[in-house]
Image (cartoon, rainbow, N blue to C red; front, side, top):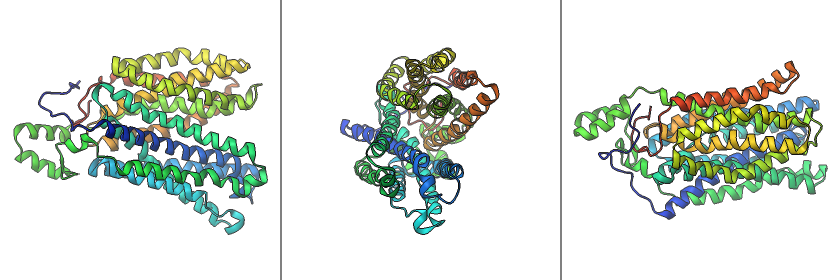
Amino acid sequence: MQDSTMTEEQAPPAQRTTRDLARAAVSGWLGTAMEFMDFQLYSLAAAIVFNKIFFPDVSPAIGLIAAMATYGVGYVARLAGAVYFGRMGDRIGRKKVLYLTILLMGASTTLIGALPTYSAIGIAAPILLVALRLVQGFGAGAEIAGATVLLAEYAPVRRRGLVSSLVSLGTNSGTLAASGLWALLLGVLSEEQLLSWGWRLPFLLSFVLMLFAFWLRRGLKESPVFDERADVVDGVALRRDEVESAIAEADDHRGDVLAAGVRQRKGKAFFLALGLRFGQAGNSGLVQTFLVGYIATNLAVGKAVPTDAIMYGSLLGFATVPLIGLLGDRFGRRVLYLTLTVLTMAAAFPAMLLITSGSTPGVLIGMVLALNIGVLGLFSLESVTMAELFGARARFTQLALAKEIGGILATAIGPVLAATLTAVTGSWWPIAAMLVVYSLITFVSALLAPETRGRDLVRLEDAA
């Protein structure tokens, strides 16, 4: 295990003012909020209206499947965006890439609200919808990773966990904003108004948020860590062959720093990060996606109860997320990971007993606990730990890939597997078992990972 503390030989990153940090924090929070709002707006629209206005010539069931399929293509595009923009962010800087991602997300979401429907232009309407969905996902694939990297690299070492956790709060903000907008529309508009023009309003309103986010990032300074990297010359990272030449010409200290970044065998830190991501992403897919439908379909409670539980859990998350960030700064990342995953595994079966009890309070308590311990708490830790695991030379790329691959493997596949297992067994226990398995993967990854609290983020090599 490598020493992960700051060495005397390595100069600390250039300092930024409190105002710069505040702008970076708000920018990171707002970009993540916009990403999750865009995706939540689309997912709700796909479930409520898109099957009727973009796929009207097929049966309602097939229309819903087609609408959800257009939702799914965004996740494929996210992986491509993670690779493309991740490499760009490691090469030319974090700030420049975050300009592009916010513009791509905001413009594509706004244009969805301006699309002609199937009745106006026929098959071209759903084709354009898919195209915009791909653009939206392409930008989103690097947004949360870029915001995470930027905040972690901006934050003071002793408050890095707290500051980085603001990215996680963006997920709550975006989800609640999108859900609130759709709840308002459904409450005040008739079905005819909703289908004719009302569905466009949330998408068009996102243009205002995009302008504000772009304005914030326009005055944002580059990450101090990127500026201090030994392999960055005139704002651009050296290619590998250029680094090798620089090593040969540099003094012993700079040569050692550069060599550590390009000659270390890669892979271990990435797979550790993927394992850390697996628990949070898998638990999220089960709690926030699968359980909502499972409860509404199989339990004798009101259909609004599970969505209310997610709303209450998300509101509580505004306290949970920064608290976990603070505790991580105080006691370290590993001990918090181990504690949260053990609590999630221990609570999995009791929480599912509460949720399936048939009582509204039981559903609310079980869902709120599962969301805050097994999802939001882990997300708060993930925001800082994954950034600290990777070296500065490939931090953006590796973090984006770990997030997106972990999300596809766990979040996308998990609900389908849960639906299959509960159908075969006729019971809820496979859901609890999956929560245990996902959390166990993260527990083992945290056990194998080095403690990263206080690590010098200017170092080019990975922590493991």
